[in-house]
Amino acid sequence: MLFHELLLWLFIAIICKVSGSKGTPLELWLAAATGAAPIVILAHAAKACAKLAAWGGYLPLALSDPQGVKTLARISEKTLALPSAFSGLPPIGWLMVFAMTVMVWHSRRWISQAAVEAKRAMYCSMGVCALVYGFILFSWAWFK
Image 1 (spheres, helix red, strand yellow):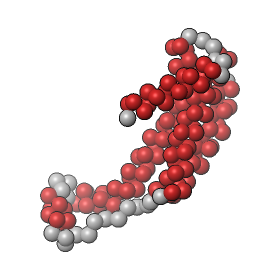
Image 2 (cartoon, rainbow, N blue to C red; image 1 turned 90 degrees about the vertical axis):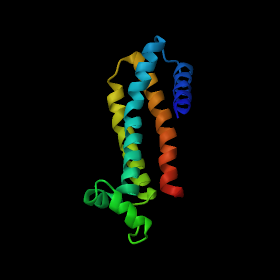
Image 3 (cartoon, rainbow, N blue to C red; image 1 turned 45 degrees about the horizontal axis):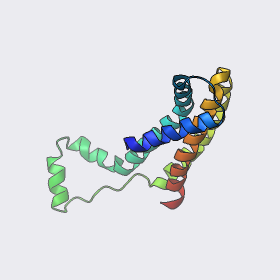
């Protein structure tokens, strides 16, 4: 996973440089990270929501049997049906696509108040991350 993230940040750096961003490499990385932060946060929230939706049905079992020994025995003996998921990926995907759209819209105003040297790198990183993570969220919504 680290390799994919490094490739993404390398791609963002190249896009920022090609688009004419000025400044030292450290300033560009900082501006790019700042611009991408809201989208990356939303992507992590989406993953958390997907995990909660998939595994949330086990919460009552975990609360009633914190050790899990009795629950495991009942599941193994097939006397306890496996809990169903709270929700599938499509509703979460659509919700997060909508949330990302709203976040990008509001982030434009926030970025417009940044220093002139940082704006281009912030817009580039936000755009690249929105495209990458938006594609993933859209695939959750459409194809699952």
